[in-house]
Length: 260
Ligand SMILES: C[S@@+](CC[C@H](N)C(=O)[O-])C[C@H]1O[C@@H](n2cnc3c(N)ncnc32)[C@H](O)[C@@H]1O
Image (tube, rainbow, N blue to C red; front, side):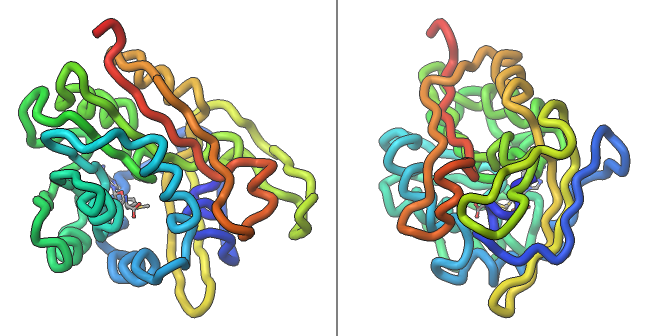
């Protein structure tokens, strides 16, 4: 899966493993254990892929600020801070107390709350924008997280999502060269587990999560009356990751309630 190349931005994968089906499932509570590593990783400027892709997300996928914006899976808060910078009034949730504390410490203007995306502690229609940036692949029950996002969205609200790209998640480049073939060794279809350990420039990070095909995301949206109104498979900015101009690293989309 991508989660790795995508999130880490060409790191060195020390170990990476994909497994089919439901084997080895467990709650994804690991983020609290690796919170300090993630804070270092995410707060090192221009270190991971976030810095290469965020401009597309904020300029093309995120709508103009409204009354209230919710971010689900905020981590140490860099996406929330970027939303605040663009005029959004932000509430953000994450299940890791350490990450939330780090987020609060540098952004006193937003509300950071301990919660899981699958069970949001907010009233129906409380937000006009829900943002899920690289978190839907990390929650245990992705369709339930999408359903909760739909529940807390106002009728005209929008769900803005970035996930690791389902095609990229399904395979890998067979070599380091720019034109190296991209190979899908297992299956593109279905839900698969990803775990990996990455190291680069003295920083190390463990990732685990899920890989979903495009239909699985679409079905999760359809089940709660949402449909995709805009979709992007952006190239990285600048000249880093040139082969990511052939196979996209991320999938970004914006969804809204159908028939409203
Ligand atoms: C890759 S990090 C992304 C953090 C942030 N959105 C960013 O882009 O910097 C994934 C985040 O999802 C959070 N997460 C994991 N399971 C979750 C769940 N069930 N509900 C909400 N967030 C969850 C993790 O704690 C972690 O902070």
